[in-house]
Length: 186
Image (cartoon, rainbow, N blue to C red; front, side, top):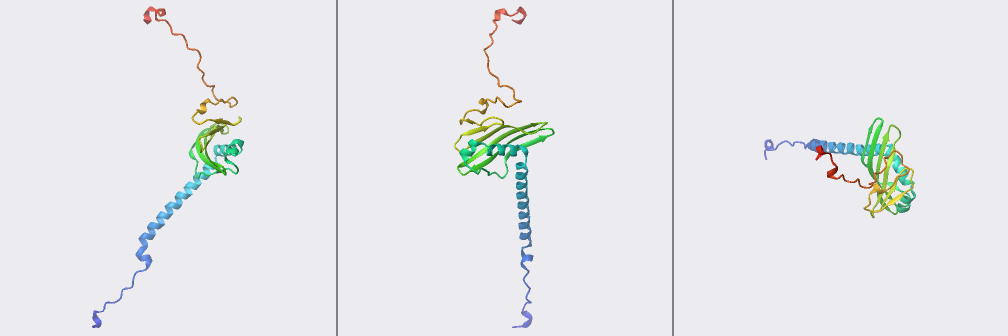
């Protein structure tokens, strides 16, 4: 063999030099995932710290029928409650649901709340169980159970202020006889 025909040995590039692009892509994906998780945790924490959520959660947790159906302790199993809270000074509206669970079962809670210049007021808090049963908990009233398929509007709300009375149909008005009309209206 001729010594001139042997090629010099080229050192192999380092792992980093060979895979820098993959490392950059993986780092960017991890960064995006970390930001998404931080946003989800932040949204959940801000929603849970809102007054409508805290009022509804306390009302549901302290209700004896809900405790009887789910057992104790009752915990919130939702990362972020689904729905919205819209606040336009000095008014606000909230409509959301969150899931709860206890040793005896699971349910979800639907909440509607309003704010008119003062503190938030819960308009409706309903606990929906897995078997289709629904319990409506209303502020200042005793708990009422609602059968599946019935309308929550049929529930009377005698001691909740600010609501207009429900319309009740009265006797039908008599239809005028066409002969009684004035000549220019015929």
